[in-house]
Image 1 (cartoon, rainbow, N blue to C red):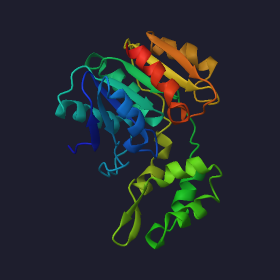
Image 2 (image 1 turned 90 degrees about the vertical axis):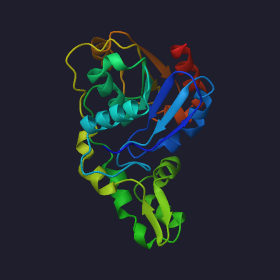
Image 3 (image 1 turned 60 degrees about the vertical axis):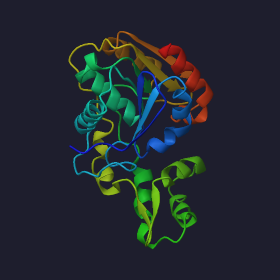
Image 4 (image 1 turned 180 degrees about the vertical axis):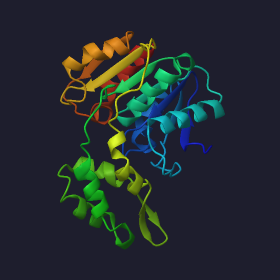
Length: 253
């Protein structure tokens, strides 16, 4: 089984961080380095993302197996798992399958419920970029701006472009991500309450975890607590990294 691409720094209890859909470990470098003052931080590219391997198989069962393989290969004992969005679904699913193998769980702006597909326009825009004919990132941004208004979102998405000897190409496996998108919002698969101590973080302006969702979340995660980072949306860790860092370190302490 292929090993996921990762970066590791710091020492202490292992803290594995998983990015969201269309992201990569690079999104977490700044916060990861802060956490590494107290923890052994492992930033991970999930399959079909970043510098990790490409595969036609893409779903939470596979992503949990990838995470299990990484934990075993690195011989990590009692790691803390932190995941944002799709990464949050992966770590929740891992906790459902392997609760005895982890320390604490941190889930950033995602719940265990099912979410409808809502990345259609973004994927349409990414597919419209003629990567093999690009001469600059600006050209890519010009095309993407017709589909995605928010500049910071475009900057995030275009981090997936890499230079090649011929010009540009995608780091991610865009055809498979487009094909398998419906599985990304899938509901958590679990049988018993997950007793792991868990911190759910949500953006105050995000609608991914509503007050109404919390009762169901507490049924599944009876040892969970919820914190809201006000004036942030879905990218709460990027929009207010100081508050995110404070809440996570307080929970882990």
